[in-house]
Image 1 (cartoon, rainbow, N blue to C red):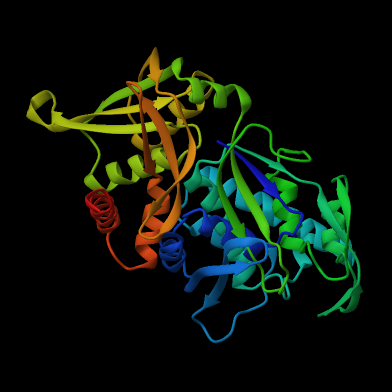
Image 2 (image 1 turned 180 degrees about the vertical axis):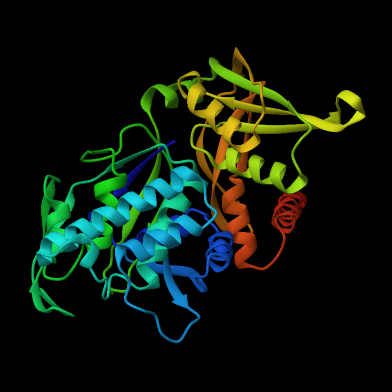
Length: 393
């Protein structure tokens, strides 16, 4: 799945976390994983309305009274302990390394001597891992980024008064396209620059394709605009979705009778979150020697077959995996919005037998339900009741 990062309003770690939260990412499971790895913290997010439109703010709080200064190796050791998928861990370690290298270059010291001051407590540790984890939840496969905004001015930090962009951010912005913004305040932080440096696959003046969901993340500055992250369906895929028709997919299947319930659940969760996987299905049954067993089916695009197959092997340790190429029929569909529980939610609109249907995105419903502390069915049933009342009126 492709995404476009509009950084014209700036980018930082907390802005990116907030944009992902606005897209429906729930960070509670990640904080639980961090707690088991020895980092007790909370990621909170809340709605924010500014001139740039509705969005979210996000903040990281740690539960200990004081946090130590950390070297890159200390943060890398924490990343190694957190039970996240390997692609998430690799991305996070790459962002951390880019930031550490930039700080070392800025201060002319070896990387192992870098002390993360204001950029290095739990907030940046969680910002980096949280963004990479959230991308996995959304199934991000490619990121295209806008040109970065150019800004000037100065800020006070642990090293004294420094010119903007901060030296580490300036180092990471090398080779990236920029545009004048007229701003005299920090728009791109070192952490934000490191995220772009590692996660952006390319740069473009705007998204190309069919726009889907939009997440807007605001930072602590009272700026009118924030980081906007768009879901983008490439033109060819957008045409296929809009017009419907047949497309090729691969089905990977194996029978499993050797995993515990916990291991099976973790395998299904890991596969469902993988960018290379389109769908996962578990069919329980009885296998040889009357053992409880089941069939695991994974659907992916043909070009992602090898990556998806490796993930199945890694998470199940099955000794055999059947791979079948097949066609599937796709209904005409496109991104839309639909009123649910009094708000407009991102939705899928599709056609079937000449009739038009719209249903809200599951992630959006889950995020709204969590915000209202109700179950997701409550929103759907209420929406159905409102529709019925409207028809009766």
